[in-house]
Length: 106
Length: 178
Image 1 (tube, rainbow over the protein chains, first blue to last red):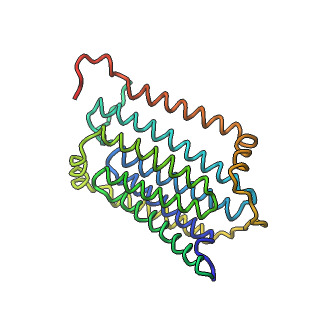
Image 2: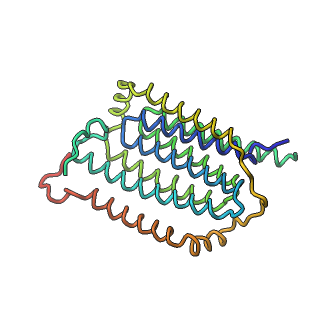
Image 3: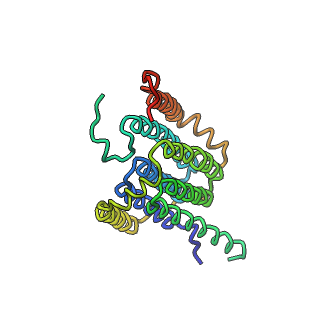
């Protein structure tokens, strides 16, 4: 009997699911925070993909872990930047709705 | 297939269920705080998936960085913004993007699934591997040294930039803004 948890396709389909859910949320959410959360889902899907390919297709097991850790670092930096951006925008516009922020001046 | 393997498979399904439930909460919740809670659940599930892919270290890092740090930062961002009920009312009122969102997601899903199932994946010759933290650290400091340092610089610049962005225009206002 084949194990579900020891199959490449399981992980790839799960990653595709996370990517698709992320795209859906990115379009459908009405706030900056919601869009940021959807971006985190997409990045996690990418991480699962790297780890799955690393586990099943690549002889050296460190590469996928290294790249997934890089993705985590980038995602943390991105979250910090976007949250400070949201604070600055909210101080100026008193809203975190992207459709209220229609002018970007210096 | 022994008893323990059944338990392992069941736990794997539990983690997958955690990911699916969390991401559905993330995109369907009306209150923004529930969105971040759903994200935390989904990220815990992804941590379990990393465990099944053989990396205990990544599991711990996922819980520490994502569930611990990123979710806290997001919750802080929500508490600064509008009150939850305002956003919830706005989300109920405007639902015009649903069709666009569903079509984009479905297109991406079918394109990726078809190409995924049509590819012949060539598996590695030897499954043997060293998943230990020592091997990972050696790779970080020899092979990926430049990228590692660049990530550190990016994190540093991001933190400094976040501080500058968030405190701009704070002291030159006479009265506190509400």
